[in-house]
Image 1: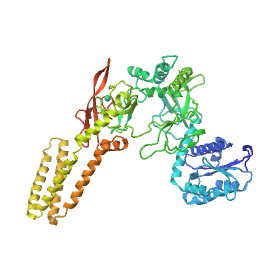
Image 2: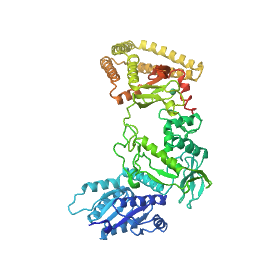
Image 3: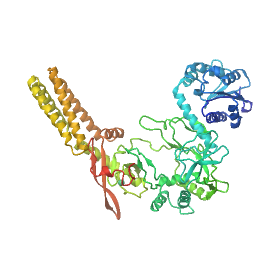
Image 4: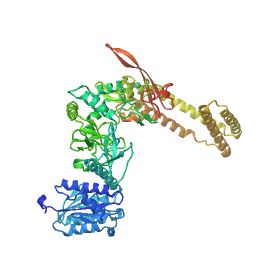
Length: 640
Ligand SMILES: [Zn+2]
């Protein structure tokens, strides 16, 4: 019985794969340590002891048992595991037995065997901790059938491997972050990533996206561009500082844009959700960019990891332990995994080695290059906290169909997509160029969804869809013609005439291709040729069989009715905007695009942009003339 933590004694097992041993083993050790801490125990093995054990291929270090190699899935090649198991079952002083995730231990064929070993360990009165899961000792008669089934499933499943991998990634990153290594992606504004040798000396600066795996080498940050650091400190922090400029993030963005300061992502290209080709980002500042820098502690020498939770399989949890996604975060067929803001106690923040104790930031050359002002930064943080409600665990968008026209509405002035944004008066679509540039480009063009959506749907209903009676009559007429033709071609002679006529059309369309003016026209003519050619082949096939179906009349009436019913259903959908998911899918299936033009209008004494006209394109209809060429080029930079 484990009555108190002081009397508890634990053993641990981990397996080291040969590739990138150090990383994997360190992460596993960190996982074991975290799991031990969770049940109030301590794993007294240092990282160094582990490193030397790996170097000398020891299978036992104090309470830790080890195995090596990828092929260590066979019991015979697992001396460490054998010793570990023997001790777990025979040493009465052991109260807790720790193993990493199950997929680290068994191959699928072994699943049942390993599940039964778990059972034996627990039946021997030990608490078994697998990964982060705590399995209590079993007493005689305890029913653990569920645990056994779960265990065999987990040992055997590919899913477990995936989760394990994701957990490992989170643990490795958390572990590295705790050790002061930069594990994030791009360096913050004005900083550059540098490669440090095992002694902690800068080897060289790393390029964007460059990744290096060298044992003992780590990545950190250094000041890369002093101008940017000065913008960050002097123009952003000092202007936001309540004891300084005391203005808001959006105003700071305007100020930076007015001074033509390039934004952090200027010069990069990106393919947006609604873009077909990558574009250069506009290079202008937005309020949220400014706030991101105000919140980023890199400028005061702090390395922060895990501000956002955004993994699909595992995320950073308490004490650096990976956790599973909650049901609200988990991805679904409709929506990707939700990004959340982690609470402060989950985020990892340590002193980065790019700042000296006196508060000076270091350059790549190791020399002091900038004196950071901690008090300004702290005042800014207090103002941020006071101004912003807690974003703890708040998903960014609750309802993927909140804006059923998302991506379909464009601003005619600049060609950009209009974004769905909530406002006090209701949900709006606002020009993306205006939003992305923090108000510097295009204009404040917006329209309320509740005004726009019914209009768009009504227009589709009235102008694009046929009336029910019209459709029925047209279809009936078509069917009648088909039947008439079918009857007339019944005698071979008329079919032969038809064939000769069609052959002439095919010949003509073939000749016309060579006279085409340009590639577009040639393309069109080729299509006509192919169509006529297909018709000809159809007639020839009919001639060959010389038998014509006579029984098409009855089923065609049913088909006409089915088509009419389809139309009726479609019209109903267009009347009802309560089911936004339905509306969103309908608009997309019809390939609806809406182009909105705005004009200046007086609103009281102010001059505002009012919706003037709109063009709705449906199906294959081309975009309105003029807009395709300008699409995205005016304000979002050039196409790549
Ligand atoms: Zn615009």
